[in-house]
Image 1 (cartoon, rainbow, N blue to C red):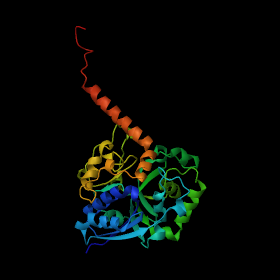
Image 2: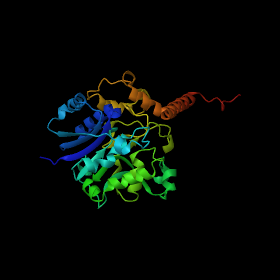
Image 3: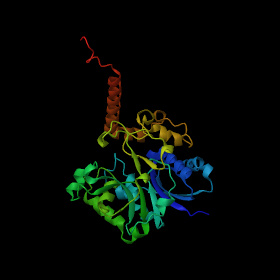
Length: 324
C-alpha cells in the first residue's frame, strides 16, 4: 500500500464552497491515501456529512480529521484579511495537530497534481517550504516589509501551499514567535498570516517548485497584462491558486472571474454542483462583498478596459487610405 500523505486546511463558512472544490481536486489528483486535517469554524454535522458526500467516490482513499477552532481568543484583535481573522489559524497548526510533517493547503485551490513529491521534499533543516513567487519589492505589502528592515530584493513567498515541519516548529516554539510579532504590529497587520510568516521566516525557508502554487489573479494588471491567462486544470500538472479577490465562489464570481471555468470543472462533481453565488447570499457573504468592494471595482474596471480595447481593435483604420 502506498504511504499516506498528511494535509491540513483551515476553513470557516466563508470558503465552504471552495473547500469542496479543493478537496475534490486533491483526491482526484492523488495517487496516495490522504489524511485530511480540517481545522474549521461553524461547520455543523450535516456540513461535514456533505464533505463526505463530495468525496464518496474516493472512499477508502482518505481519512478526515475535523478540529473545531475559534480564532477570536488569539486573533480577534487583529484586522485580518478583508476583516477576516480565520486565516491566522494556520499559525497554530503545530499546537493542534500531532503530525510531524504536513502540507498546508488554502481552501481556494484546484489541485492538479499528486502531492507525494512535495510531501517527501527535503527541507534541508528549514521549517517550511513554500513557493517564492515574487520579491519583497513586488509584493503588495512592500512598504511595510521595508519599513521593518527587510531587503526589497529578498524572496517573498505565498502561504497558500506550504510544506511544514511541525515537529521542529514545536521545538522552536514558532507559534509564540508569530504571536509576538503579530502583537507588536497589531495596528498594521491588515493583511493576515502571510505577512507574519514572511517576517518570521525572512530569508529562512526552502523554496519549492512553482508548480505547487500557480497563482491565478482576478486582475493581473500589476503583473504586466490586462487579464489573467485562461487556464484549464488539465492544461498543466500544477496546483492552481485563486489569489486575490473577488474569487470564483464570491458574489457574481461565475461572471467576473476569468478562470471560473476551471473552478466550475471541479465544482460540478461536488455537493455544490448547482451552486449559484447570486442565489446564496447570507449576511456573512454580504459583509464579505462589502469588504471586497474595492476589488470588485478594480475587476469590473479592468473588464471594461479589456472590452473597449477589443472593440477598438475591430474598428477599421482609414487614416492611410489614398485620396483623402
